[in-house]
Image 1: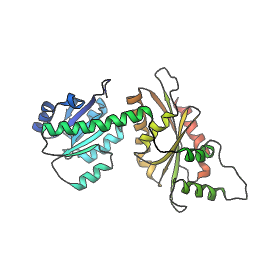
Image 2: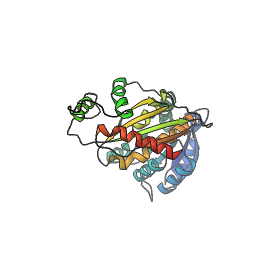
Image 3: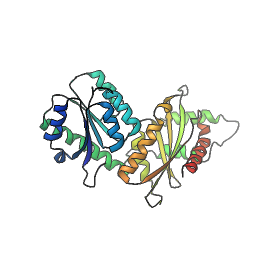
Image 4: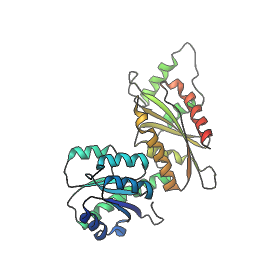
Length: 297
């Protein structure tokens, strides 16, 4: 966990013991903004350490015994999505690099690498992590989403309304396409409504309009989405292809929880609806997500 001075915890995993020890002993970790809290000689041990020690960064060889680097990244994303991952490999293998990208890997470094080179790379990684930390803390979100919020807010909070003689779904599709929420009417997509509330350790609601940007910073790693602030909560519409939510929805929610706990030192309550197929069903999904929040308190 990042300490009060902005120094990040790291686990080093490599099956080459001599190289692993050299990295730990020779690299100026503190000078680069990190401190080593554990080491592992295989992928399985690395995953276990991530679960128990909850590091900010896992620096790992991409090819290790028992659990490969790619499988290790998948498992880490399951149990600790807030942990950043950097791969170190002696294989200049673009296939591996492409596979690593899907797990939001922070860096992909090639062996051999000297202590001085590693120091420079760690500084680059710290800059990226610092920026993410600042953006999450401040809720930074530059895109102007006012028009999208004005479209979604009444639709989600109040439901569909209009002249029964008009094709409401057609009108909603047209507007959603114009706003970039979907490509065309033939695109087969599903919707999920996610409601997030942030609380201090004293159980006071700490959710603000700035929280929308913070939540969006996590959501955009996984899915097309739009969020707005209402009644002390962040309401998010998630948009994905059929079956996609089964793969990443639980990881996404854990990522939000872990980032709020790690960066804001707050608790978070999340309510999530089931998938719905039509924009007219979003109000029902919202009520379902609100009901889910009631069960978690």
